[in-house]
Amino acid sequence: MSVSSLTDTRWRSNFRRRLRAWYKRQARDLPWRRSREPYQVWISEIMLQQTQVSTVRPYFQRFIRSFPNIASLAAADEQDVLRHWEGLGYYRRARQLHRAAQQVVAEFGGQLPREPDRLRTLPGIGPYTAGAILSIAFDAREPILEANTTRLLARLLAYRGDVGSAAGQRTLWALAAALLPRKDVGRFNQALMELGSLVCKPRAPACNACPVRTWCGSAAHGLQDQIPKAARKTAYEEIREAAVIIRRRGRVLLRRCGPDERWSGLWDFPRVPLSAGDPAALAGELTRKVHRLTGVIAAEHRHLKTIKHGVTRFRITLECFEAAYVENAASQPHISPQKWLWPKQLPSYPLNSTGRKLAGLVAGHPPPAGQAARGQRTNPRRRAYAP
Ligand code: SF4
Image 1 (cartoon, rainbow, N blue to C red):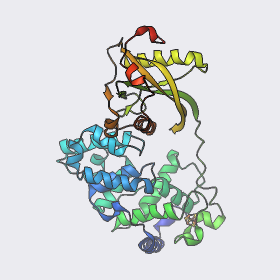
Image 2: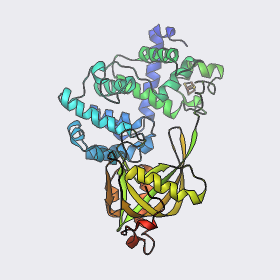
Image 3: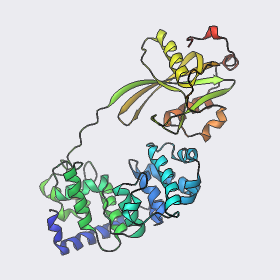
Image 4: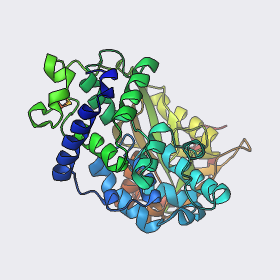
């Protein structure tokens, strides 16, 4: 099959008919498919980027309950939006969603625009999301191309090039557009995505159950495992960091991550890069770096646990400590907002996943005997590092 073969209208209508019949039988009942309300389509499409359907399901329902429309999302505090996003990752999506809702209220009278060019001016809405919103909510004749349809269409075409290249994208967008029916476009686009997700899977596609196998170039030549061409492997970087629970009279210190930080807008326990491998040098390094970050001097670091986790291309070994507050000795004016919080206040602050684990430690483990009291003292002779 080639893009030019799609001028054959009978071929296209057979393809659409088979795909629609399959979708009617096999479509999953997903909460965001019960409504064609543009706002709900938009939220689901943003959540589904880089996140699995099973993970998104409860988040979507909770989000819609709390922010049922664009106006309520626009009026919400960003912290509240991030709290609802906590655990989904890629928090930039939530911040952009919030900003976009405010822009829709300010510039488009609270309604998502129906024109692709205006829709794409909103933060976080690219060609795919615009196509999904316009076709599903407004039945506009707009194609979509995301991970599932990229794989499906590349296999149908037996496209051996790089699907991420400009030429690959041009070819696949052209195919996605050529396949579109005149009516019921959103349903057709969803059927393509569903087929890619359930049948034309990345590994071991279920070709025997595929409704469009008759027209599949990859199945005809046994190329399913080679198409799409494997993307270049991500080069992961190993890094070591430390997070410190600083205790002061029963409360702990949280700081809000700045705009240039990995978890911008979320709150976190003081977290610093770690270089010292030597335990004797570690306390000094921690004290110095935490002081630079927060203005707070803490001492008596006690190792709690090691957490290994990944964020984008980083493989992080996080050494978790607790320490006692000594004094506040801020030496620089531009420190991110920070708060001393009671353990029971932590659930209402948006944290990253490791921050939430540490919050669990705070809730489950009171400070060692005597430390709460020592956290009040300001005896600088006890500190490991003096600025
Ligand atoms: S026949 Fe196989 S490879 Fe081709 S589209 Fe269907 S599932 Fe994918």
